[in-house]
Image (cartoon, rainbow, N blue to C red; front, side, top):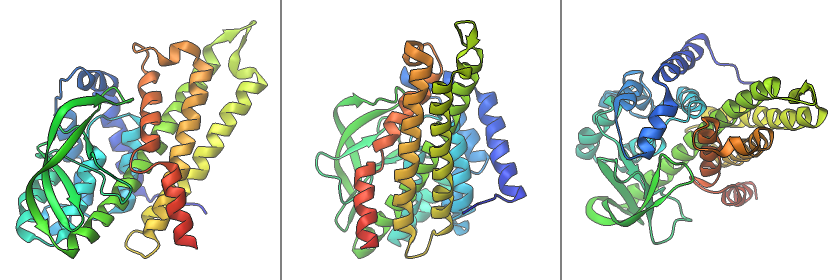
Length: 330
C-alpha cells in the first residue's frame, strides 16, 4: 500500500527539516547530555505546531492530527531531537482522555504552546515496579498511572544513564492524585498507543538518517583504490537497510490513518515492530560500514546509532508488540 502526503503535509515536514538543520541538533544533543537543558529548540518546535498536533482545538491546539504528527516525528527522529517529546505528546492524549476539564484546561494549552515539558511512565500493562520515567529532571510534570488512578510523580534516587546520551532514566513514585475512575484506564491505553506511534515514527526517521549518512560515507571512504560503496557486500547491506525502512514506512502511516478506529492498537503494534527493527538493523549496518569511528563520541553519527538502539525497546519492545499483535489477530 502506498501513502502519499498532500502538499500541505509535505511542506510541514520540509519546514521542520529546515528548522532542525539550522538548529544544529548534534550540538543540542551534546548540551543535553552534559546536563544543560536549554529549551530554545523545544520552543521552536512548539511554535512550528508540533505539540499542538496532539492537543484539541478547544484547548488551543490543532489536533488530534495523527498523520501530521507522524510526519513531524519522522523529522524529529531524522535529526535525533533530544527530550521527552514522545512523552509530552502522549501526556496530551492522557489529559484529554481522563475527562477532567479543569486538569485539561490547566495543562493542555501549556503543552501546545511549549510552555510545559511533561514526562511519564509509559502506561503499558507490561510496566511493573519500579516505575521509571525518562527526563524526569527536565520535566515540569511527571505522570504515572496505576490502575484507575492518575498521579503526579516525583523522581527518587540516582538516575540511570540511557544508551541515548541525552536522556536519563529515573525511578519515580506517586506524589499527588490528579484523577481517578474508569476513564483513566481508557485514557492510559489511548496515551500508550499514541506514544507508541510517535516512537515508531521517530525510529523511522532515525533509520532513514543513518542510511543517508552511511551511503554518503560509503561513497567517499576508499579501500584498495575504490570507494567501499562499490563493493557488492556493502551494497547488499545498504539495500537490506533501505528495504526494511521502506516496508516500515507504510505501516507507520497506515497506523496513523487508522487512529480512532478499533484497529488502531493493532496497527500501532505492527508499526512499532517494523520501524524499531528496521532502524536497529540500519544502525548495525551503519556501524559495520563506518567501523570503530561510528561509535566514537566526537563523531555525529554515533548519536543516531545510539538513539536507534534506545528506541528499539522504548514504548514496548518488538517482542511485546508482536505478542500484542498476535493477540489482536487471534
